[in-house]
Length: 435
Ligand SMILES: [Ca+2]
Ligand SMILES: [Ca+2]
Ligand SMILES: [Ca+2]
Ligand SMILES: [Ca+2]
Image (cartoon, rainbow, N blue to C red; front, side):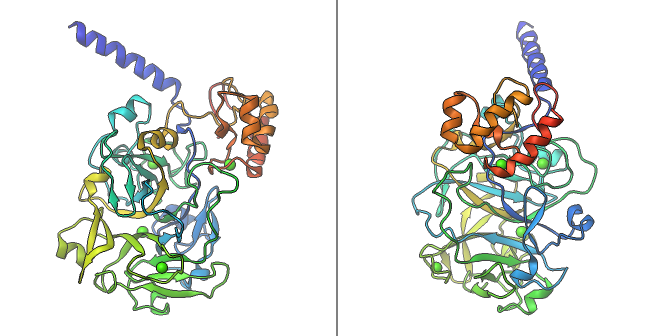
């Protein structure tokens, strides 16, 4: 009796706390904004004639950052299905969290991790699926991996948590539809992130350690995309292309074929993460190629595997790819489908997840002075934040530098100024951040 009353009290307190934080779930440190695509059935692609399913998009916007023509996609019906940076300098023993997107019918296998729930980080594939808004999101693994597979570090359960929402997460989103906060029930059609890479470094901006210049970009197209007939491969959704110049229509070549990956011609690579380890943009068996396959790929049937199984070329036998990770390692159900994949360098899973995951009470965008209000007095703190992180943190110790990342792209820079000014002119209610 006494116990249940106590539980009731705790629940009430929990609800009251959640109510106070019911606005603007976001992250403490935004994952850097990705380059990504939406599929043909996405309402954003259908409603905006300037955006196609073959384009590589950027946030906020979305805006086109690589037009489809520059990846050899001549048709409005082409779909960009996998995208990967070169990742040529990444050390083979370094660890990371996987970052992935799922398709419209993925449900997840487990509820949120209890440790993350206790930290007001209540969103994962299952909660987002329950709200019919999972397919436009990016999720983080809760355990570490390296380029060869899962690492056995068990601080958190094998699960996933929300890293970027499709919309309305104080900028930590894909500018997608529905334009609603995580877990807000959605009855409309929804965008589907279909390809993605996050320019490294993954969280925040660290001067001087931006990624090394990329010599080529890797991509795959969806099976039956019209332009596969003209690209220099075998008209297969399981061929991987490289592009040496994303600023011009020329430059596409075959990087690795379905046969070299142990696949079938009718397979369809649905997500792609490449470590071109010697940095030459040429395929060698020492390069690491991670990928998932679409639900109807023949190889999944032959191997009795899942569209949420991540495959690798490392250790593959003739005619079959090897398995990099199983669905349960990511808190996914065998019926789920991973359709975009990247990674976020990380040495301690719990620390990274607490920093990057989306939840409540995380970061009040625009409250750079951290007094709970966004108003004119934040201008004096915003200016040093734009100039230098060290300067800002010396002037405002204990405040969150990323409160100045108004557009939620993971960087504090000049591109935040316009939104900050607009926000100060029309300030949000107390406790809420800039939209
Ligand atoms: Ca895809
Ligand atoms: Ca969502
Ligand atoms: Ca290579
Ligand atoms: Ca920013």
